[in-house]
Image (cartoon, rainbow, N blue to C red):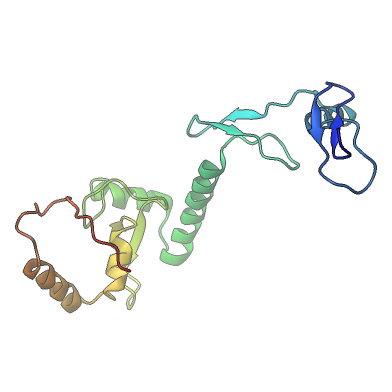
Length: 185
């Protein structure tokens, strides 16, 4: 064994020393973790693999301080975005959660434009008129930016429709079929 390869005094496992500075550690990282937990008055065995309360998937316990998390990182992010959305709707549009749910029910629980119930990562988005601020409906994460790209101008949308109809390939169905585009160099 060289200077950077050591044997743990507790379990006997061979481990690589992470830092060349300071005193050589006597225990492998896993045994060190258990020792510190006992010193702090905790159970020596802390679960490393946890089950997410939202999606039910197994996830690895993150390092750092704090309690044992209930959710995996993606579910925690989605939950935070939903909480932020509720506050934003109230502040920006003056819509309560009950009003939002009622609007969504009036639309049949789908996007007002494309009719999908797959909202995307951020969930349903409130569409509003940028000049008057009036709420128009609830859209998905694809239709809302599409309207924004056309700057709420009906003439541009009509022009886009004419363009698509003029260049529509008759072999394709007008529904959700896609075509693989060649990569641009």
